[in-house]
Length: 69
Image (cartoon, rainbow, N blue to C red; front, side, top):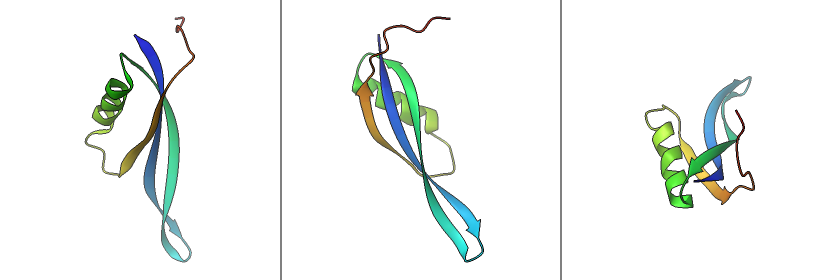
């Protein structure tokens, strides 16, 4: 297995004095998978059922070799 870095962009509605504003938030996740396609599928599965919109912006191979516990 390899590690992949997935960047996810979400949209959040924020109340401001001028009304509602949509704010875009980008988060980064480390995913253990066999391929880029599998890593993207794992991210989509993890976010399934949430009430907000999200988009997988990129999935790239990570240079991380091993996670020590």
